[in-house]
Length: 213
Image (cartoon, rainbow, N blue to C red):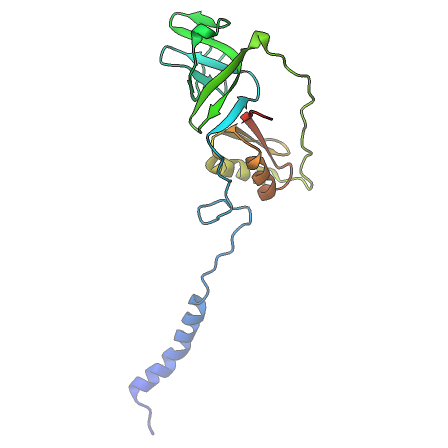
C-alpha cells in the first residue's frame, strides 16, 4: 500500500514529538544546599517574640524631643551625639538622673532590660553607665572555618544574609568569616547560620540577648 502524504508527515514528526516529551518530562532544578531564596524552606527560623531581653552591652538612649530611642548601631561622635534606633517604651527621664541634656535633646548610656517585640523595646529596668559593673570575661571567639572560605563566597554570604536575617543591621565580609549585626538573637539564628554555612563562617553580633543569659 502506498503511504499517504498525511501518514508520511506523522512518521517524520513522531521522533521529534518523542524527543520534546522526554526533554519536558523533568523540570527539577538543582538548588544550592545553602540557598535561602523563597523556594527554599530552610531559611532563618522565626524568633519567638515578644521576648524578655537585655542589651548585650551598654546602649545609648537618645531623645531629640520626639520620644526616646535605643541606639543599637553606630553613634556619631558629635555634641550632642547623633544616633537612632527602635523606639524605647516605658522610659521616664525623671527616673534617670544620670544623663546629659542640651536644649530638648537628652541622652545617656544604660544597660537596659525589657521586652522586645521585634520593633520596639519596652524598658523594665535600666542601669546607668556610671553604675554598671562590667564583668571581666574573655569573649569566646569561634575558630576560623576549616577549610578556609574563598573571599568571593564570603561576600556572597554577606549579601545573602543582608536579605534574609530578621533584624539585620549590617553584614561584613571579613578576612576569614562574615560578621552580621542583628538586633536580637536567642541563639537560634547562630545555630541556623552554623548549620547552613558551616561552623565559624558566620558570626552573629546581637545587640540584645535573652535576659537570663
